[in-house]
Amino acid sequence: MKTICVLVLVIALATSLKSTLRQTPQKLQGELQKSNYGKALLHLLELHSMAGGAVSELVDAIEELDNDLIDGLQLLEFNFQQRTNQHNALVVQLNQQINDAQIDISRSEDVIENLLIPRREQLETRIATLEEYQEINRKNYDEEVLIRQQEHEAFEAQVAELTDATVAVDDALALLQTLSNPSLAQVKKFQNSLKKIEQSIKPRSKMAPFLKALLTLASNQNFSDQGIISQIVNALNEFRNAIVDSINDQTLAEANAVEEYEERLDQLDHEFAEFQRQINAVNVDLTATNNKIDQVTEFLNQRVADLKQYEAELQLENDNYADETQIYNDTKNEFTREQQITEQALALVQSVDFSHIQV
Image (cartoon, rainbow, N blue to C red; front, side):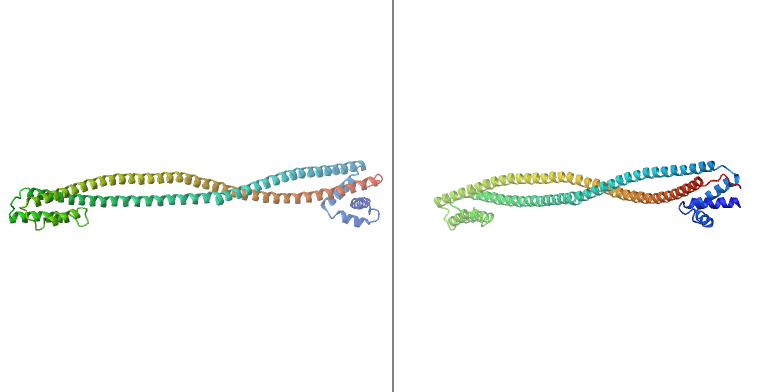
């Protein structure tokens, strides 16, 4: 019965020093039994009382327990402060990495959209323009070749015509040299030679006026008159000379045309080569630009992945720290509650004289 009374007294004081002397033992016992730690202290006091231990031993034991709780609370505070410092440093680091990644992403997107892609489009447009110039150049080249071919064919036809006329004139001159008292057949043959000359000269030819004058002179003439024959011979010689001059002039013109044609083709080839040189140079720039776009895009994708990783790490760190903070607060509250109960128990033991209590 005495043991029960001692336990009730200890329970009451351990719960609250202010209400120890005013509360009933049953109520005090109920307060301490609300926690496992309170129950453990009750059990400790009960065992100590049953063993008949000295009060000083009980005081030392409770003080040691209180010191352990204080040390544990200090260690908890220290570890949590270390964890908080680590958390804050990691949050600062991750936020800086997130900010750097966002800046890199923004700059990379700006470089791609506002610099590299417009540059690529500009280069592609330039290449398309140069290729169009080359196409026009080749078209002009083909036209020059065709025109020269047509001009040369016309030249050869004209020279052949004039050559035939020269042969006809020579035939007429040879025939006139045999005429003294021409027969009707000789006159007819001479007139046929004139017709042959006429047929060999086109109406628009420069020789046409000479031919017309010659035909007028030769028509219905009396070839027995040597004066008339001499006039016709002179006319034929002038006509022949005019034909030869025309052949020479056209030959010279053809030579000049060939020279100009070759110079024009050389010019067109040079222009084509220059266009190709520019295309090659622009293609080098275009290849470099495309490579740069690929590099910046790869860097952009990497930084986007980095950003997601940093954000995930930050979220995980915040979640972990929140959980650890909750654990810290719960543990601290438990330490504080146990320390308060221990200090109350210590005050109880120190304020009550157990020396005359007999179990």
